[in-house]
Length: 581
Ligand SMILES: CCCCCC/C=C\CC(=O)SCCNC(=O)CCNC(=O)[C@H](O)C(C)(C)COP(=O)(O)OP(=O)(O)OC[C@H]1O[C@@H](n2cnc3c(N)ncnc32)[C@H](O)[C@@H]1OP(=O)(O)O
Image 1 (cartoon, rainbow, N blue to C red):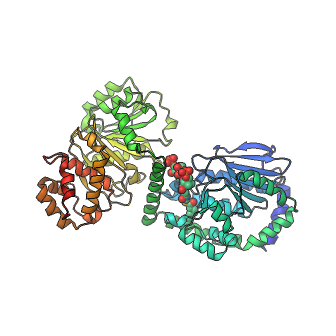
Image 2 (cartoon, rainbow, N blue to C red):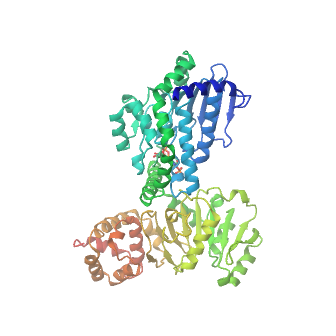
Image 3 (cartoon, rainbow, N blue to C red):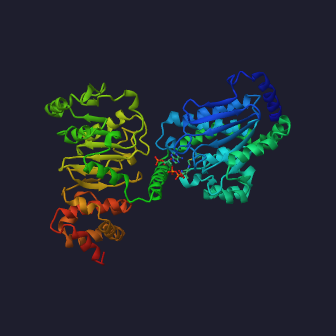
C-alpha cells in the first residue's frame, strides 16, 4: 500500500514539474529570512541547501517552516536528483531545536512549531531524492534528527553529534528514535538515547551514526552523491521506501498523538525548570569558554561607572521616573533608546518636570492606550519597527520597591514593551534610590504578567553613582518571595570585586548553609546580633530554600548587611573562621 502511494507520488511529480518550484530553479536562491540558501546545479541535478542562521542554526518555527517548504519543493522538482544539507557556520551544523521555542512557550506557537518539525522530518525522511548531510560542525539533538533523516552523513572531525535530549530533561520523539535505531541498531540506540550521548565524529563513525569523516564534508558529499546518482532513481527510491516505509507509516499514524503529547509535556513546570537551567548553563559555559573574568555584569557596571561610554546601542528602560538623573545620563551619553515611565497619578508634578527636561530629546510623549497611569517617552529617531527586536542587553532603571502595585506595573510595562519572550537577554535592574528595597520577582509574582521569565530578571544592581550591589543570576527554579533589604555604602564597590573576599565568602556560606537554620541563627546572633536580625528581615528563614541559592547572591547579601554595622567587612572572615559553623 505504502509503496503504491510512493509510486503514485513519483508519477505525480512529473506533472508537477515546473509548477511546484520557480522556473529559474537552477542557480542560487536565498530564503525569505536569509537563513539559508539553495544552490541548484543544473549539470548534476544536485541542490545544496546551506543553513546560515546565526548564531547556531537553531531551528525555530520560521526557520523550520521555510526550510521545510524548500525541501518539499525540491522533492517535487523533477530536475533535482539529490539534495545536500550543510551549514555556512564555521563550527555548527545545527544546534537543534531552538530551545527558546520550548522555554516559556505560547501554546499556539508551540503547536505550530512541533507540527512543522514533524513536517520537515517527513519531507526529509520520505524524500524521493538522494539526501545527504555535510555535517561541518556540531549537530546535537534536533540537528542530529535532521541528519538522521538523510541518506548519507559525512562529518568534519572533532565536532559532536547525537540525540542528547535527556540532557535537557526532554525525550526524543519516537520517530527520531526509530530513525536512529534503523541506523545504529536497537541496543546502541537505547544506550545513546537514555544517556543523551553526544559523540565526536570519530566515535560516531565507530557506531555508524555517520558514514564518513572528511575535512571537507560538502565536497565529500558531492563526490559521494555522484556514486548514488549513477543508479536509476526509481529503483533507488523504491528501495529506500521499502526500508523506511514502516517508520514513515508509524510516524504518520502516531503524529497527532505525538503532537498532543509534546504540547502537554513541554509546558510542565519540571520540564520548564530543566530547560531554563540548561539555557543558563549554555550561557555560562560560553562565558567560561571566553576565558574572561569580565562577566556581562561587570562590563556593564564598568561602562556605567565610566559615564556610560559605548552604551549607544543598548536599550534602556527607565521604570519609575524618580528624578530622572540616570535616564538623563544615558541620553546625554548617546543612548538611542530610553523608555521612561512613571506612575502618573502618584507623581504628576514630577513627571511633568521630567517631561519638560527631556522634551527636546524625545520624539513624542504617548500614553499607553490601556493604562491610566503610565506615560511613555521615546527618543527621537527611534523607529517603531525596531522595538521588538531582541536587544543584546536591556537595562532597566527602576525604583525598586516593595510596593506590589509598582512592581506589577513594572512587569506590566516590561511585557508591554517586549511582547516576546526575553529569552536569554540579560536584564539589569538599577536604581539610584539608596533606600530602595529590592524584591526579587519570581514566576509567582509575574504569573499574571506571564511573558517575562524570572530568569530574565536575573541581574540586579543598586546604583547610587557608584555601584552598591550585584546580585547575579537567579535560578528559575527558585521561588523568590523574599524581601532583601539593601543598605547602601558607596565604598563597597572595591569590595564587590575583590575576588579573594568573594571566595572566602563562598567557602563560608557553603559551610554555613549546610546546617539547619535554627542551629545557625543563634550562633550568628552571638557573633553579630544585627546580622541575625537582618537575615530574618530578609525573610531568609527557610534554609532549605536558601541553600539552593547561588552562593554569590548570598555572599553579596552578607557583604551588604555586614558592611552596615561596625563589624563591617571583616564579618565574613570572622564568621568563616568559626569552626563550629
Ligand atoms: C515530548 C518532548 C519531545 C521533545 C523533543 C525534542 C527534540 C529535539 C530537541 C532539541 O533539539 S533541543 C536543542 C538541543 N540542543 C542542544 O542541546 C545544543 C545546545 N548548544 C550547544 O551545545 C552549543 O551551542 C553548540 C551547538 C555545541 C555550539 O557551541 P558554540 O560554543 O560553538 O556556540 P555557543 O556559544 O554555545 O552558541 C552560540 C549561541 O547560540 C545559542 N544556542 C546554542 N544552541 C541553541 C539552541 N538549541 N537553541 C537556542 N539557542 C542556542 C547559544 O546560547 C549562544 O547564544 P548567545 O550566548 O551568543 O546569545
